[in-house]
Length: 164
Image (cartoon, rainbow, N blue to C red; front, side, top):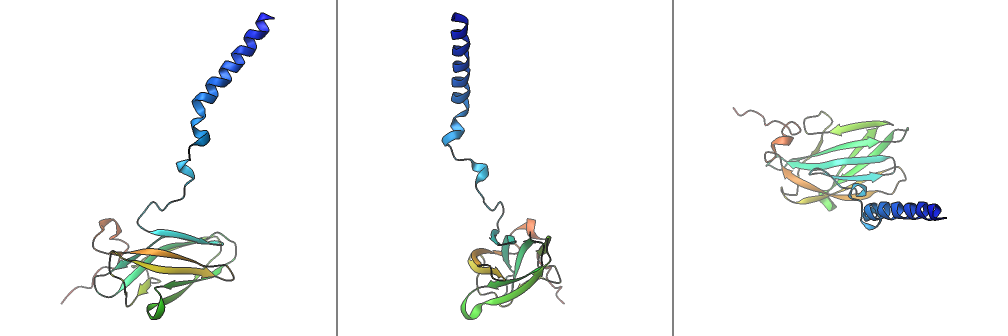
């Protein structure tokens, strides 16, 4: 009988130690489950289409460039509507994104998303609305950055035209 009591006491003690050393995760929020944008840009998801790391770069004049990665996780192509700005200053783009593909738009690409004129100064945010098909669209506030300020983005922005 005493052996049985010792075995039960050992099991209860082991369970208590295990619960006591691991229960801090029971009530604490898990940081790895929180979604966030790990870079300077912002992200949005509409149905099968995800826009990642959207940033607007100002060229110091009155032109800007929307840089973003557009991901279509569905199998069908989608015609994605992107509206930058609001009111009379709004500029519209329509992007065709093939199913199961990722397309990156940068200022150096032939298919770049050029904002001319760019109404917002560097340091501001500009509303960007993303929508396709019958999916409900989403609006995100995209930061406007000065293109010469961040060296890590030098390959993504257009090179200035040489002066005479």
